[in-house]
Length: 336
Image (tube, rainbow, N blue to C red; front, side, top):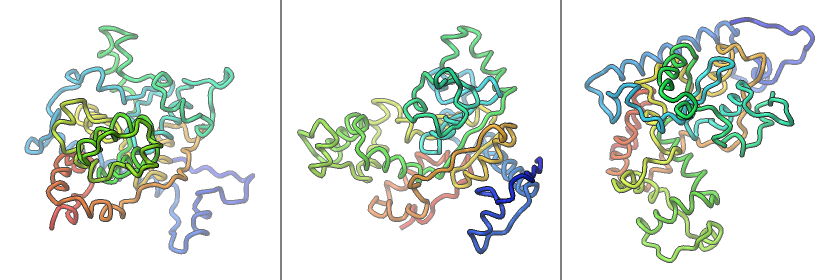
């Protein structure tokens, strides 16, 4: 870690040691070098956990045993490539992915504003961030490179720095539910809420627009959502939507050897360290998140009305994400 000092500025920069110390009585200041060493240890630990369970034959889950060549192209659509800096990011919805996509746009210079690449991630409009044409993803390689695409992917996977960010799987589900079903979202209302309300709440003749439905008090409950996830018919119709699809299905962590595993629970520290590792910390800062983030402490309240048997089934469905990424089993939710 390089220890840089800027004598020109005497005020403590926002988020710096002095700045945080002044706002917190129990904050203990650590040197940048110490923080780097701590981060390095944390990464070694996270990667060891992941590799151990990928190699452990007694721990099984769907798709675990397949090779990278077995993964169909359409399942590689979450791997964003930045050739300028040699970086591959697997994005997981509901895990700071909007801001990481913004960072990837700045790094790859894939989006111009009046002919000039964006320099500040926060300047990039949200609608561009989630537009698939903005990003170069692995699933687009086939159209570009034809039969050489797999070979090229493997070269990049070997040479580039690969990272992903994860989050407690149950908290991620709550977050997905809050953003897609508690707020008015026309697309998710039509594609998911209408079928859920019909199947699990016995509603018929539902309004065609989400604002009408909300006006009439017709909202999907968290219980409807959990039933939908557990219903075997759901995946027979189509794979899980990316907002609740398991991380192991989005990012293939047993087939791709990630160099960095970040967690939403330690986002600020992980992001700062990663940008340093990528040697781009002078180019940009990771945007701070001001939105009302779903907290782990809410889990008990959210699951209070969900029957125990459903909670246990749900754990089985997301168990691989808990285990591979070192999240403790939520015992309090899985026992009477």
